Length: 235
Image (cartoon, rainbow, N blue to C red; front, side, top):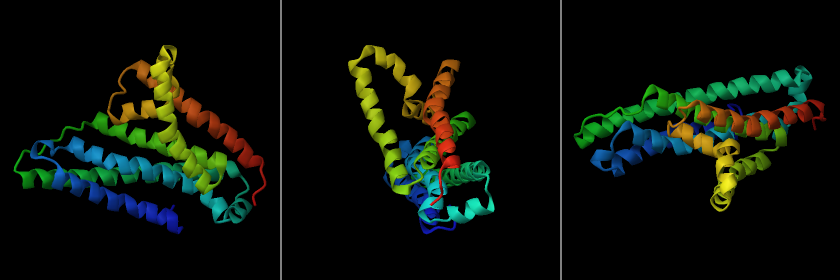
């Protein structure tokens, strides 16, 4: 994540895009729209794209850079290596979100003062924690694809398919098949992730839906991917 060009520039882009998104809200948003919610929303889109890419590269770089030959020689326990990568990915994601929130808070103060309006802090701690969790889920999807495919281009394309193409197909199917409309929240991870970003995961049923989609899209594929990773030849 830090010592390859792609990973390093991904991390740099988090700060750059956070500043750009914050500046765009200050410049283009009407006075009544200068509040922390809009800053958080503006920051959310680049975070939801970049962080999963970082998670993917944290795994696939071992194969694309051929450093896995050295890594797994020095540490034969591949499960421990992947576990360490998962922890590092989580820490980078949380710290990145903290930086983004801080930039958004600074932009909120500056923007409200420039507009001559009261500074509005309308994102609660619960809302912020759900936004962070939503991004962690996205990173976990990327990390899982990295473990399963172990190829950077394939994993990145796969992420965009499951995050952009598949949700549209499932939403269309829910519109034309009434029985699937009730099933969609339990199998569509994007549906539950959007609820997290909107701070709408409140009831036990909604948390159960999140657990269901997490099991389908993260836990089960990760178990299968780890099995193949531990038993495959590193080339």
